[in-house]
Image (tube, rainbow, N blue to C red):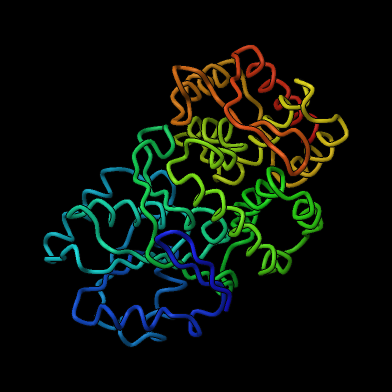
Length: 358
């Protein structure tokens, strides 16, 4: 069992049955325990959790609709109303059992109800294990704008048990893979090189690289909890990625990892065009991302819509579109201003990649 001490949060990586999870639940024996799941984890993970930990037999279960399109205030209001009807208090415990949507929403719901309840994350997807459950960001979407409403409050405990990945659909591995590649590209060239060799679901279960990703995020998040400095490096691929994901959310939704994969190619392309990243390094990154994620074509309407979403990105300052760019594999910089001309050119370049790869 690997234990990582993060500010105001404890992270344990290893079998849930060998962790402190049972002990923590026992400390709430005189309080209500609420388990938040979505339709996926209700069917694949909930029974295991309840049967393995008798103290959860009387826990209340809150079922969220699955999917990013349901990560909205209306669903949160329904949950808060249910909390009130059940008589839950601020000293009760919320256990978020699920992927990124569940940990994002569950943390947001718990951190606001009666000015804050304790909550625990038990991430069940690769994306949640290496990213969403770590670092204290909780949030929901506002229309097409990703994570516009949120809090920065860490889970009391995070339990990362890779056994949950055994029930994960293949496409969900690639959803988390994008975030893992991001860590390598901004911080650890050796990690990136290792991740390039991944070819099957078995590769994604390597706990060593999951641990490396978590360690990178913890270090950046603890040094800059409010996302005003170095933590912004974690947004690599997300300036384009969030806008692309938001643009297609209501028409033909794509996963967060898929959008970030395309976004990393876009931001690497701009890095190369500006002379920051070598052509050889860019071509290496591009080849991996094109091989891994289906690229999309962007017509003029899409280009206009995506740029409009980028202007409303929460990372912007003084009306300027800001992005993370990379100087080399394993090194990046933040607060780089993008202009509309290079964004348009980049989206057209991505469209060309889509046409040539199909």
